[in-house]
Image 1 (spheres, rainbow, N blue to C red):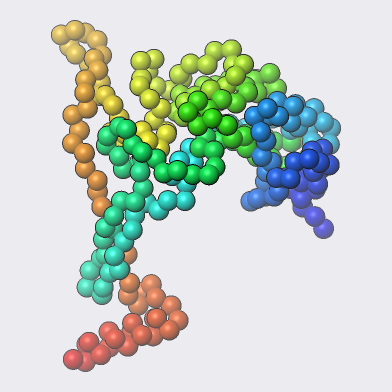
Image 2 (cartoon, rainbow, N blue to C red):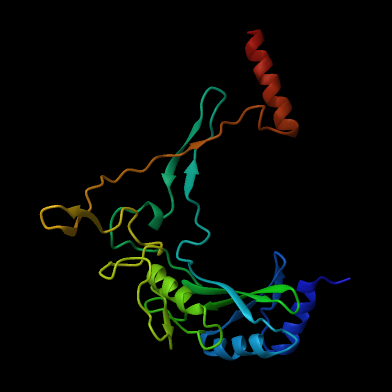
Length: 247
C-alpha cells in the first residue's frame, strides 16, 4: 500500500508530466522548478483540487557555494590523548576577511526552497527553485499566490541577497538599513564588517570598524579507543591495551 507522499508524487507526475524531478525524500514530495516556470507551477499546486497546497509554511534561501566541502581534516588520535583538527578546509564560515575566492561548482549557487502543506490530502511538498545567475540571483515572488511569503522573501533577500521579482516592498527585515552584505552567504566574514555601540556623548548608536581579533577555536576529535571501536578493531584495541598493562 502506497503512502500519502507516494500518492501525491504520482499526482504531481500526472500534473507536471514534463518535469522529471518529482520524487519522495524524507516523507516529503520534492519538485525542482526553473524560475520561468515557478509561478505557473505554484499556481497549479495551489488551485488544482488533486494537489491543493493552500498553505505555504516556510520559504528560505540556500547558498550552495561550499556544498559538500568538509569543515576540517583531522589527525588520528592515540590512546593517550585527543586528536586535533589540523586544517580548516571550508571557506566562508572561517573567514575573517573579504574578497574570498569561492570554489568553482557545476551547480547554481543560490536556491529558494518552499515548504507547502496540503490540508485536504495531509501531505507536504518541497519546491526548489535555483536562481540562474549567481552574481544577481533573481526568482519570481510568490506573494500573489501565498501572501504570507511577503516577510519570508524579505528575509531571504536580507540574509542571502536573493531578489524576488514582483515583490511589493523588498527591503531588509532583520539587519539594519545601512547593513553591508548578506550574513548567511558563505563568503560573508565570520566577524562581520562593522560593530556598533551606543555613544553617550552623541546620544545615538555609532558604527565602528570591527575590533574583534580573528581567532579560530580548533575542535577536538574523540580519540579512538575500545569505548568507540567495534568488531575486529575493538578486539585488537583491547588486546593492545591488555599487553600494555601487563608490561
